[in-house]
Length: 395
Image (cartoon, rainbow, N blue to C red; front, top):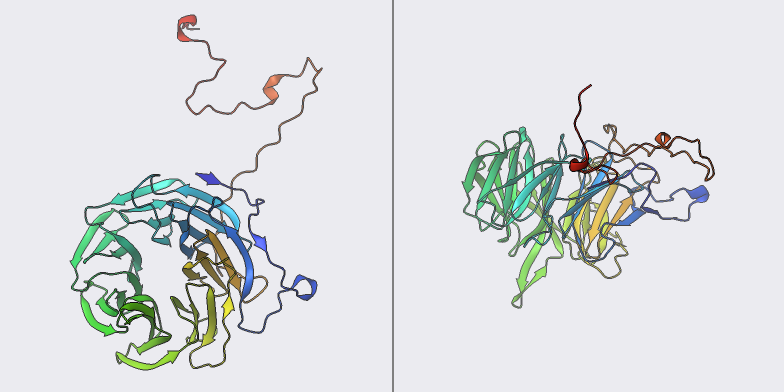
């Protein structure tokens, strides 16, 4: 486990050619603000990114089972810790979710919760964790977590007691993605459908067949649901170059949106309007536009040819974070000095080390006690006499 003080800056600020160092952007456009290597060895890919809804932090997890957090838009390294044992069969972090006590990290076989400073809070595993992929906090019960994966079981977990409250056998082939609004919890599967589920029982209420192949991503905002996915063509799955959009009030499809890139990720950005979205392809292209707008050119992320694996937007919708296969996180923003959280909790940083006083080499009178002696991890020091040379006496 590692914790860093506020002065350690690991992100790289990008000069955008503005006057006086300002980021000059047309209104609504995004540009690279900073990027950082989550795994400096290059062996592991970034498999999950998630903005903290409570603090000014960005969380990233990689395929080696390690979780790293970054503070602020400059991506100053904050903490780093291992949540999945090394040399495990499935080490990759599938999903991240920050909650009040800490951060949840989901892997294939377990759910780990760590304090933001890195200390382990709990680790939950179950015989029902076969191949987990996603998790989502219930909007009507924040202390309850719903989990799904490449299996026909959904699990409802109480975060306080770490007890599985409900185990639901679903008729869909799996549950790969989860979203919610005030009325439903939505699950997407590899058959191309989005299922609307009851917040009380998780039972399916209605299903929308959005694509002929797997759904790669979807999002919900207000009365709209939007999806991107795949369809079989000539015996192979190919990315659909259109977005399916639905009106949740009537459960009817709206006209699809044809786009120029092959989308794998999609999010609503409702800071300006509830029709503003961002889409991204796995080759590193992304677009931010209003539904119905035309002539929007994609922006290319410099991934050095690596694929994009994950995307998330900040609570303020001022920043976008992308994780790629080379182990990098790229932070884009529509302004020079963005805020990740409008009302962020104060972040606790590691104490700065106390300066050690210098002692002259020929100073024979300086007491060695002025240099503090650190506590030994096992309670023993090299200067300790062995027990057979000691005698216990009482004063």
